[in-house]
Length: 217
Image (cartoon, rainbow, N blue to C red; front, side):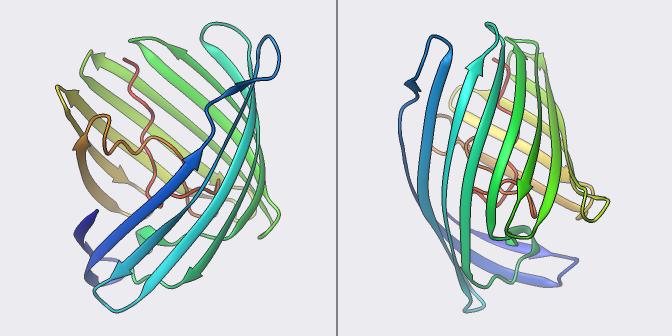
C-alpha cells in the first residue's frame, strides 16, 4: 500500500510505502474444544523522508471454546523492530509478550473482548478492551482502550464508525490520546486489516495501526 500522511503533533508530512508478508497456520484442533494457531511475517516501511523501518513478528495462541459465542485464549508473541520512522502512528516497541484474552460475540448484535498482556522486553503489563455494536447489518460503532499499568495511563482510546457494503469496507476512527483522526477504506476480502495489531507498547504483531473489532455480521 502507499499513501500520504500528515501529523499535527509531530509536524511531519510525508509519503509512506508499506509492504507486508505474513504466513500462518490454519487453526489446528488439539482437543475437543482446543485449537492452536500461529503466524509470523515481516512488514517493511519506506518514507519520503528517506527513513525506513522493518517489523518482524511471530505469535501463537491456544484457544478454548467455552460455548458457541465465548472463547478464552492464551498467547505468546515476539516482535523485533529495526530502522526508524518519522510518524508517531507507526511507533511500536519490541516485545516478548504472554497474554490472556476473552472474547464474547453475539452474531449481528455485538462483540466484546478483554485481555491482559505482559511484555518482558520493556517490561510492562497492558490491559485492553474493545466493544463493537452492530447498528445495522452494514453499520458498526466501536470503542476500544489500551491501559498501561507501568505508566498508569491510557496508551490509546479509540472510537470507530465502520460501514461495510458490497465490496467496500470504510472506517472512520478518532484516537483520543494521540488526537488523531484516520479514514481507512479497502476491498472486503482483499485488504482487510483485522489480524495482528500493535498498540503502542502493547500486543506485538505486524500491523502498526489499531485494527477495529471485526464487524458483528
